[in-house]
Image (cartoon, rainbow, N blue to C red):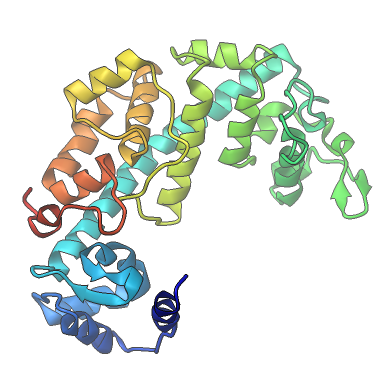
Amino acid sequence: MTGAIFSARMLLMQKDWLSFDEQLELLARRGMRIEDECTAVQVLSRVSYYRFSGYFRYWQKDPEYGDNNFIPGTSFNTIYQLYVAERTLATACQDLLATCEIVLRTRFAYYYGTHVGPVETFARGVGFTRPPSEEIAHVDERILSDLDRSKDAFITHYRDEIKEGALYLPAAYDRMPIWVAVEVLSFGCLSRMITASGESGVLDDMAESLNTSRAVLPSQVRSFVYLRNRCSHYGRLWNTAVTDEPAMQKNTKRRIQRTYRSFDKHSAYQILAALHDLATRAGLCEDWLGTVIEPLLRANPLLAYGIATPKKYGDMPREVLIDANL
C-alpha cells in the first residue's frame, strides 16, 4: 500500500462525533440533495449514519481514496426509499423463511427418528458423517453447544446432570427425543445436520417428502440460513454478493429466469429463487416470487437491480443510481 493511499485511509478512520443536524449538513456539503431537511434529520435519528453509509457509498465519487463527495444528482430521498423498500423485502422473506424452517425441523426430526433413532443418538453423533477436515467442528459438537445454552423448561426436563466440568456430556441428553432437541437448535446447526445425513437415509426421505432432490436441498438450506441471518440482523441485501449460492435444477432456474427476471448466480435473488422453488415444491405457497417479491422489485427498480445483479462500489452504472425509475 502506497503512502498516499495509507494516509487517506487513516484519515477515513478518524471520525468525529456529529449531531444529527451536523450529519445532514455533512451530506449536503458533499453534494447530496436533501429534499426535506426535517424529515431527513428524523430518518438519521432512526437509522444511523453508519448504517446508511453502506448504501450511499455507491453514490460517492471515490470513497476508497478519500473522495466522499457525491456524484451529481444524488438524492437523500432516493436512497432512503431504497432502504425502506429493502426492509419491506426482508420482512416478506422472513415470513416464508419461518414457515420453511419449521417444516425442515419437523421433517428432519421425523426421518431421523425413523432411520437412526429417537433417543440416545443425535448428541453422540450417530447417523452423521464426519467432516472432511478435523479443523471443522463435528455436528454433535454443534448440537451439544446449542443444547447446553438452552434454559427452556422442556429442555431441562430431559437433560440429566451428567457433566465434565461445566459442560454437559452427550449422555446427559440420552432421554431427550430428537423432536424436542430440534426446537432449540439453531437454524445453522439444523442445516449442518441435514448436510451430514446423506448416508443415513434421512436426507433422501426429507428431499422426497419436499418433492425436491437431495443434490440441491443441503445447499438451499445453507442459503436460507444466510438469508435468515441477514434479515434478522438487518443486514444489507442490496448489492450483496452471495459466496455460497444455492443449487437449483437447471430447468428450474431457466424457468424462473424466463418467467420473472434474469439474475446472477451470486445474487440475493438466487436465494429468493431457491426459496420460491422449495416452498412451491413442498406446497407451502403458490407463486411467492410472482405475487410477493416481484411487485416489490418492480415498484423500486433500483432495489431490483442490486438484488438481481449485485455490483461492487464504483461498478454500478451511474444511470441506475441517478434514475430511480430505471
